[in-house]
Image (cartoon, helix red, strand yellow):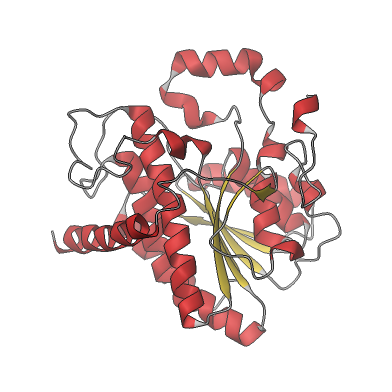
Amino acid sequence: MWFLSRKGPSGFSASSTAEEVTEGIDGTGLTAIVTGASSGIGSETARVLALRGVRVVMAVRNVATGRKVQEAIVKENPTAKVDTMELDLSSMASVRNFASNFNSSGLPLNILVNNAGVMASPFLLSKDKIELQFATNHVGHFLLTNLLLETLKKTATESKKEGRIVNVSSRRHQFSYREGIRFDKINDPSGYNGLSAYGQSKLANILHASELARQLKEEGVNITANSLHPGAIPTNLFRYHGLINGFLGLVGKHVMKNVQQGAATTCYVALHPQMKGISGQYFADGNVAKASSQANDSELAKKLWDFTQKLISTASES
């Protein structure tokens, strides 16, 4: 579609693919973790990073499905270095187990792509009794990032290469609840709206990246943290909405991005040299984009950080 082709300052546009934005980039010697890499833009992100020489650890809930994707990547690219490890972001125990296994593996970590997500589910609680979308999309990734941060720092110092943390958010962050984050009603089914709750979790992704970027800069650590909107893509995120899913299946290819285009901004932010030193920004279509006023609220970001740490601490004690 013509309106997807207008290039921004980076030289890329909404129609750019993940392969196009990483063309000519050599990621040999880098190691990346990609959550939710067994389908959709996660699997395409893993494939393209591996294509560029990056060693990719696919962190997936369904290991059997993940291994099939891994096999497909290696079949297409026999030199690809890809591993599959189990990670259920809705379970803090699973997140801790994954992080422990990775940290003890001796592998370096240059890039962390927090991609996995669940969208617009009916009201459900996670294994830790936290609303499922907030638990999976935000809390799980927050905990994972914290547990892997020392490995990221160690790698950045020893390799003298910039580490990158990438939070895959969504333009839906603009359509969270009116108050942005329902701190006092995270687990309250009254007034729950699946799409608003999704927007809340995606707003949290941006706020998390922003506050993390601030802290890393303050520490003088050579690691960046950014967030992004991948674009509207007909993936299985819509599995809880049969009517929407069916509609997207019919018209999605005409009005939405395909998976190759959907993974482009993630791969750009994770790997492109133009991103060196850029942190605390929000991207879309391979370029810096404008997030909502709530997403740019530094005090809200700090409040969310403290709230999430307390939520994790409370869940761990119970």
